Image (tube, rainbow, N blue to C red):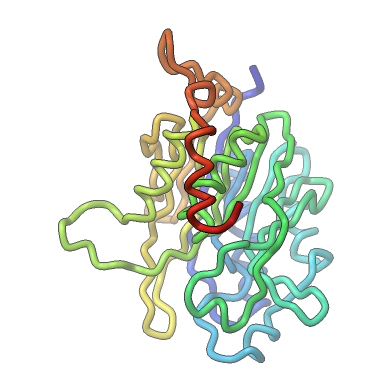
Length: 278
């Protein structure tokens, strides 16, 4: 059993194209989350730039590498803590631009993940990542990461869980969808399904606000291994829940059922063959 962790998702509204303002915003968010007892802190997708780009030059104006001082400041805000910050940014890599997430401890950047599934107009500006999402070990448990649209592909969460993730951190920018039947956002349903079907904790940090006419969902949530939402953001945008992350590994869900052992992979290969991917 690992030490219990207080996991926070922080729902903020980045200022479009204002890197300096967003550095201050995210550092303040991490500092406040720490003051409120958080150990693992998840910030939204593209939290250093905003989302509604119109030109490639706008994207480039906000692009940074993993050596940018903001990540040292996130690390400094964690000083004395064995925790982790997971937050989204535009990453510059040679001529390519990526939607990325940095996983930062008090010692600095531990891993960077480049979003592998690009949504809609993101394909105009960004290059999709080609590597599987990383998992970072902490004294609280193993933390994996997906970004926004990645979560809509069940294989992504399943592969992280099989590889040993206890918690999947999901920086996201969910555009507001119509909800004609008054239910919760479909993206939150997908996050809850990922948690339940893989017996893994999920922490989604969505953004708030409106940007160039686009409203965002504000669907941040901390979700347990049964798919129940434990916490949603308060008026200040913070949702914090105490989690014993290693309990995600207890996948015997009844006397005769196990989340992974009950799988029948020999029956699933036909799906990939039909799609021409095997």
